Amino acid sequence: MGPGLLAYTIRRVLWAIPVLFAISIIVFWVLRLAPGDPVDSLMGTRYNDETAAAVRKKYGYDEPVYIQYVKYMQNLSHGDLGVSTRHQGFTVSEVIWPKIKVSSQLGAMALVITFALGIPIGVYAALARGTFLDPLTISFWLALDAVPAFVVIPIAQYYLAVKMGWVGLGWEGVWSPNAILPVVIMSLPGVAGVARFMRASVISVMAEDYVRTARAKGLRERTIVITHITRNALLPMITVIGLSLPGITAGALFTEQYFGIPGIARESLAAVTAPDFDVVLALVLFGSTLFVIANIVIDVSYAIIDPRVRVGTRRG
Image 1 (cartoon, rainbow, N blue to C red):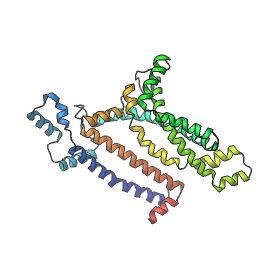
Image 2 (image 1 turned 60 degrees about the vertical axis):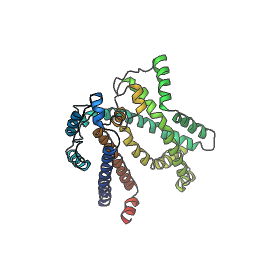
Image 3 (image 1 turned 90 degrees about the vertical axis):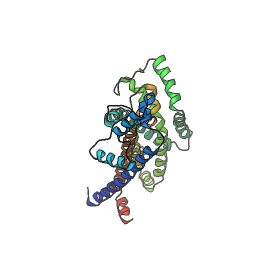
Image 4 (image 1 turned 45 degrees about the vertical axis):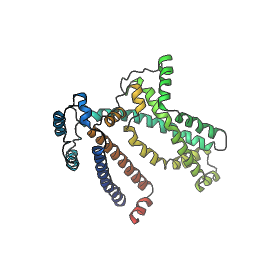
């Protein structure tokens, strides 16, 4: 890594610190000032003022919000994400990390399938531009994307699992055959977006002078498509891939609900409705951090590919 690229990377990282700090302040205050009391939810019908006061003191909810925030950030600096009020006796780390692991594994598999299908489909549609195959290809995947997950999942479960017996329905872990159907359902709706983006990128590259020059030299069309068109059309896809990576940890609510997957999407919904302050805050900060890191990686990747990016930023 050259000194220019290193300085550019450091600047991007330093900019991320105040962004994450601002996010933590906003989310913390919104959670504390929003309607809903975790103590009321925790105690339910057993609520009485004396016990509620003791519980609020235990979790520090009786202190001013700014003091709660300072204490939270002090604990966070030591890796302590707090405790869950919904899962009594468990820390936030014990609650969220196993579920994030499950959702991340499923999300990563789905993301690989999405791009593995979307990129070649987009290239094919671009090369077929002007024929009926172009709109037919894109329309087919757009139709799949338009059908809601809560409609697709019961139908797929009935025909593929109950009627044909191709897959099982009980959750037996990420690496079991029963995970195939959830992964497929998570991956197929995203193919249309990737294919359309790749199609537009390929069409743009096909109009470049170096493509026409390659054809004028008599190079084989397959070589032109792979070496000159597809390779250069993939460069804008860096942004799409980078921004998609944080999403693999978010889970898929309907998929997790219907298949009984112990993922983070179900836990997020339960934490918000409870409310479970520290769990929600940890999930928001975790997602925000991943998103900021993804943007830094994207910016640095572009700076490596095109040095003019970091030069232009420094002058700006």
